[in-house]
Amino acid sequence: MYPKIGQNIMMNVLNRSQPSKSLIADIGEEEMLIALPMNANDLIGLLTVGSQLEITFIVEDKKYKFRTNVIGRKKDNIPLFRVVKPLEKDIYRIQMRENFRVNANLKVLLNETEQNTVNISAGGLLCSCKQEFDIKATDEVSGTIFLPNPENKIQESVQFKAEVIRITQVPKAERINVAMKFIELERGAHPKIIQYCFEKQRQELMTARRN
Image 1: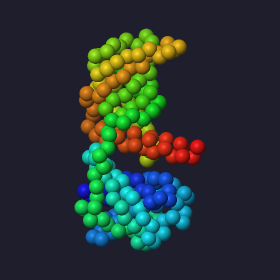
Image 2 (image 1 turned 90 degrees about the vertical axis):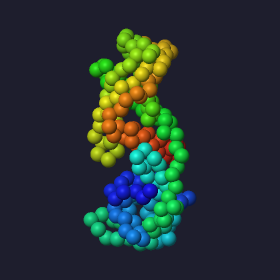
Image 3 (image 1 turned 30 degrees about the vertical axis):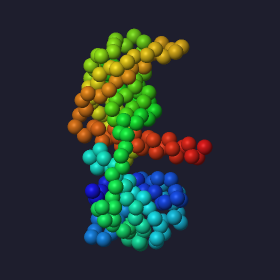
């Protein structure tokens, strides 16, 4: 399974850098072109001919990776790097736990009432709600969650239906935490949530390593 032209990828210079966000600019018979990563200043001197890279990407909710190496550069409207195109058999699917949770304070509408999330996964979310919010376990709720788009910083609305799994009182606060699992998502929403979770996890890991 090859990535598609224009697809976002995560690129790592083996043993020498943090993961960097980039994209596939073109795919030929024997090589691929990848765009200059977003955090290019952190990679000065690392992306040279012979540099070994690990590329990861997501297709249809499945994560894949392969290794390659830089074989040159190409001048275009944006700087491009030429890398060896791997054999398809050398692209591996990564078994990933899709429902891993990330802490996230996101705006969410539950039954048309504005609340905030505590965490989110591809399988559901935990919301912080006011004490007086009328809800109980096993309720089915309709909602809209607003996900930041890392490309243009514009929030994308995702509509869903969910079942309330449990409700817990927040200590020393007039609030409750409401845990829900998704039972219905609008078309195309699932990969958006997965991508958001991966990006959020990547940012948290980079922050932890700096500290």
